[in-house]
Image (cartoon, rainbow, N blue to C red):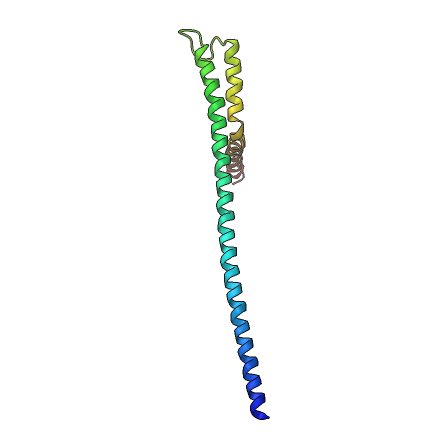
Amino acid sequence: MYFARSQVRMLQRDMIYSFDITIFLFYKVMYLENTYNYFTSIFGIMLGITLFFIICALFSIVFCGSGYFLLKKYNKKNTKLFKEIQTPQYFGTVLIIIGIVPYLDTIIRGLFFNIGANIGQNVWEEMY
């Protein structure tokens, strides 16, 4: 009777160990699949961001380039660019402003950061 119990316990222990190995391998495979999914997701996100910036750059090139073309083409001979402005040149100026719109956030942030730093420095110098 004692021998049969020990064999049963050994079989139970072996089944638990094999079950643990199966769970370990399952989680290892799931970890690899999750890692693959993470890397593909990150690659897709970075590709989307890159395409967004490429589209913004093309938008700016098209609008600013066509605006500059209108400014140069309809400029009167022997005059500076904005001295005697024609109607198509107004349209060209508007196109250039539209082409700069995606970068206004960066321009304004940089401008206000420098203005704030100068004001802070002046206030500090006045106080001390």
